[in-house]
Length: 340
Image 1 (cartoon, rainbow, N blue to C red):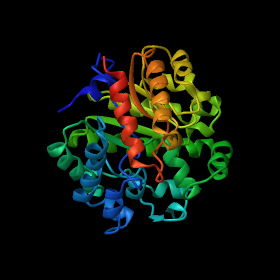
Image 2 (image 1 turned 180 degrees about the horizontal axis):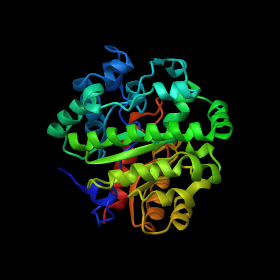
Image 3 (image 1 turned 135 degrees about the vertical axis):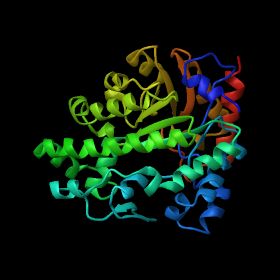
Image 4 (image 1 turned 120 degrees about the horizontal axis):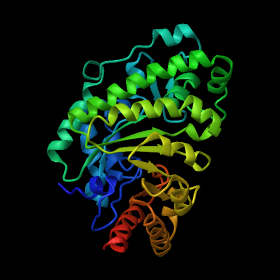
């Protein structure tokens, strides 16, 4: 087992900077597309053998230093009692959005082994076959709440913020139930064999620092505090995090993911040198000529040296249109230019 990624997450010295990509098992890979012609997205998530197969694809094709379980952040939301579908045009669709106390009360805190056994089985398959560490994951409480309230993706988060501001007590009750679900879900993944876990707070960047402190931070801190009882690294990623850097460091995550909108060295100055950072190449930079990709890689590697440790990644998920050869070139450049 190559442990460079895990050692970097712990802030230990490594022979090179490890790299993996958010959404690395996905539509930009022809091998993934071939699997998807056989099954729909949700069936793929729920079929352990197929989920394991696509999880391993980028490890073999790109040479990344960690695998992240192929799944979706809304899997536990469905287990809480919401009907989930995926539309090619709209993305995730959750019927009967949660916008009342009665709707919150109807939600359950699911038992992962009973309601999501396919996730745990995929992890067990992967641990027996992978040569690199496996990352488990969940959406963070606030981000999951936005999907559940909006009924899917949104641009203005109107219904979410209406509940926050008009019914804060209900919103906190809702977040408390989601947080209990997230904790149990990730603990089950760790028990099954996940060697690190990442909390995706994809939409926390829409909050002001004041609102983040009230409606997101306490629930992330509670989640991480419980997960810290295990010995696996915990990664926390906030998309559009520039205005929240002073807050996200309070989560006590081992690794803080940084999106591409903030200079990595500036981020390190803001959060301090006791944290490992992850990131932060703009996903669209993978459309540059390879020599330009290498220049971007070298710049980020240099800035990552100011942190306690650095895990190279994109600043968000890899895009479906990305040329595979460019992604491979980026991974090779990270390894080549960071070799000690």
